[in-house]
Every structure is written in C-alpha cells, then in structure tokens.
Image 1 (cartoon, rainbow, N blue to C red):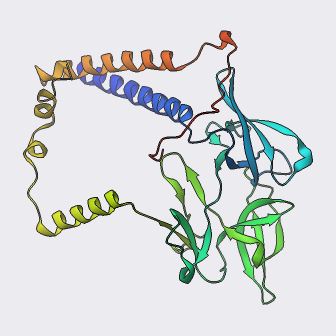
Image 2: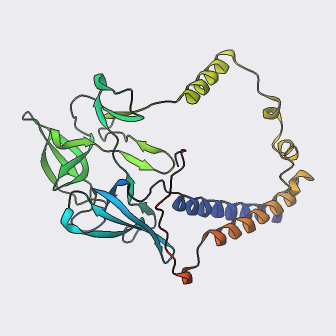
Image 3: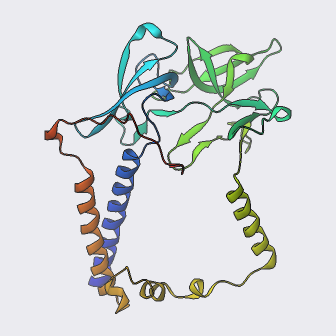
Length: 300
C-alpha cells in the first residue's frame, strides 16, 4: 500500500513537471519574428475582447517574461507599444496568449484559390448563434450574432466581461468575419456556433504537400487492407524499452512498482534540471532580439 501511494505521488509530480516543462518550451518557441504582421488582443478596459493588427518591432525578455514591442497598423499616431505575450485576467489563474498570426485569407466555396497554403471558406449568410469578429473603430471585436435583419445588418453581442466589453450593437454584414481560435498546438481552428447545434459558419482549407498526400494515401491503403500490426507494435511496453539502447531505466530489469517509482523520481530530477537551464538569469539584464529568427516549418 505504501509503495502504491509513493507511486501515485511520484506520478502526480512527474505530470506537473511535464506540464511545466511543455509550457516553458512553448513560450520559448513561439512562431513569431521581428517584422511580422500579427494580431494583438487587449485586456485593457474599454478594449477587452478586441483584436488589433500590429507589426512586431522587437522581441525581448524582462524579469523572465516575454515581451513584444509592436506598432499598431491602423493607429499610426499611437507610437510603439510594449505588450506582455502571456497575460492573466485579474483574479484568474490561466495565462492567455495575447498574440496570434495574421488572419487567414477568406473566400467563398466557388472561389478557392489553389495557390494558397491555407484559406477560410465562408458558408453563405450569417445565422443566429454564429461567432463573429466585428470591424469597428479600426479593430475587430469578438461576439455572437443575436438577430439577422433584412437590411444586410445583424444584431451582435460582444463577449461578456472580463473577456470582452459586453453590450449589444447593430453591425453591417460586410463588416463581419468568422471568429477563429489559434493555439500553438493546433494552429487555426473554427469554433462551433452557439445555437445548440454542432455547426460552423466557415471551414479551413489547407493545401497538402506531396509528402503529406503520399502519407495520407499510404495510411488509407493500410486501413483498407486491414494490415497486421508490426512486430514492435505487438511488444509489451517494457519489451519496447529494453530494445531501445539509448534508455537506461530500472524497469528494464524489474517490472516492480519499486522500479517504476525510482524511474519517476529520476525523471522529476531531470525535468527540474532542464527547467533551471531554460530559465534565464534575470540578473544578467539581457534581452532577446530575433532579427534573423526563422520559425520552424512544423506547427507548434
């Protein structure tokens, strides 16, 4: 019983260490560079839930936090603005990523451009429950369609506080675009409408390269043939570990709970060591300027 409790405790610690490590790595590998056009979100009272088009001028670190210097494209008189890349709402615990790439190109289903790597295909007219961004006062305000009117206008409600400013407004249909979500893990995604149905007001189209097409075709062929699992897939987890000479784990010699606990404790120590290495010393007063930085081709 005591060993099982030790195992559970060690497992919880390793989960926390992995989560912290993944988060640190994500913050260090943002796919943005100096000179890139992006969209910036604000939590400032009066502009909550609004997205502004900006250009990155500088990337730097201050007190172990990542900052961007940006200039507003649609507010040329505002000057340079410094923003913290990850921010928390007042009273909240979760960090929000305040910057995302420029919005993908839009088109109708009969107007898809084969030369685009990614495009947003909009479905016909707006409907009640659609999640939209409203272009007003030189920025985009996120909200929900409450009513569709006959004069090419709609009634929308902005995001409720503290994520938005709330309130309802009349907007012209031509000033709306579908609301999208963006994350390091999944890239652009289209959220479902708030009408009780699993419906999306648009869909994302992505151009596949030759390697991706070949991989998809191979997977489909294997699925149709009902191929037998490979020998390594039939192995037990511990047998797979033993076949990997790069790994040295206690569980390779003994499949006991004691061996698993020892391995987990060693992994915790390694994660903490990596976190210390990845966390810069604030006493150095250094800054990061990625003028020549080229993001990885793989999506974070």
